[in-house]
Image 1 (cartoon, rainbow, N blue to C red):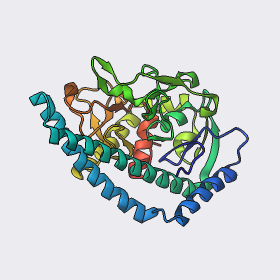
Image 2 (cartoon, one colour; image 1 turned 135 degrees about the vertical axis):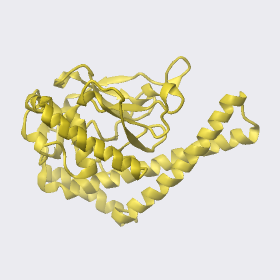
Image 3 (cartoon, rainbow, N blue to C red; image 1 turned 45 degrees about the vertical axis):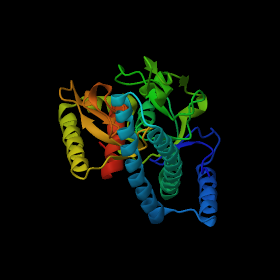
Image 4 (cartoon, rainbow, N blue to C red; image 1 turned 90 degrees about the horizontal axis):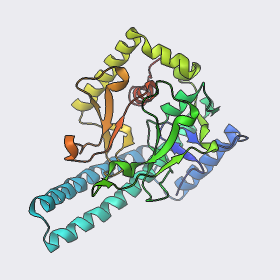
Length: 312
């Protein structure tokens, strides 16, 4: 079941909340759906988290075997009938696992919203608050599927902008990252609807106490940039040592948590970091899914989600 009549993410944000909606009414709607899920025997909290970890472990095993058969198919020019049947069976199992894990994401998002009720407020995104929308571009968006192919869609904006305006955002299908022949599996894009600019989110983050322009100026300070770089580098080292990915961002193809990487020769803070599928390899030798962390808001969301404290 779905807990939401709106788009949501693991940061505890709802996207597309109608203008006249009251926070308590929206939260009560989520609470009712959550309680109904619990009443039907659905796993929540620690039990759900453990089940999710078990499914993720199995998903990695399935992906390992799929990749083995894929490489075998490419190197030998085909698979035996038994191998082909096994490949198809594994892909079906992966789809089932992804469905279960998607439900687990919704459970966790609902719990985050219920826990954050006291600090949830409505935000109408305008020229001064576009960084709030960028902040929420970090986590997987739940409930936004491409109408052309059914794949998840990601919130994007023009990459060459230091401070994006409301009209610079759009939804892009993640099929863009999936090679198909000489092209891409899907290139569908959608402009944001008016309702997409209405968020209900935790506004206690210090980053939200300043305007988008002010936040951009803060990031340009060399001292601030150096501190952020140190913190993200420390996080990357910690995740690498634990062989962990980023919790709230997953590869839409393989379903595994994305890995935080750093460019060898970045031109600055906002050109330094990116997320990739654990099966990513250079030159399209593995999964090509990659997401650049091209805004201070995304870095703030990353640090907040993984360490409990954002940039400011």
